[in-house]
Length: 158
Image (cartoon, rainbow, N blue to C red; front, side, top):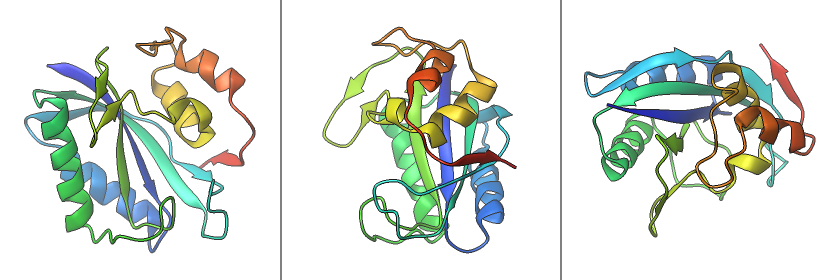
């Protein structure tokens, strides 16, 4: 079993319910949720003219390989009604793989560790709550250290 960290986000509809349903869909014999952070309300980034997000980080144990995990998460997003919209735009649910054990994966469809996680307070705040000492596999900095260096973004723990 590998330890993986995922980030969940939603800024359309009943955001808290979307996160709850996503956790329910994720939980399976081959993808077990070990712990979940609090939920954080966060200001949008990049495309700022959209509703605020609710975000959460979860730690899971899985037998799935990275591409299988990505496929599972994309299937869950589609089942929950996610539609193609503007990049970084509004969405019912967004499920991202942040870290997969200490693996580094770089393919056209998947990059692990998540390539922008170090710049995103909305990822690092919830992740630091559940795994502050986890080290990034390439920089070897802890999540807590990365959080201390990330730029400002409005993030409020709910």
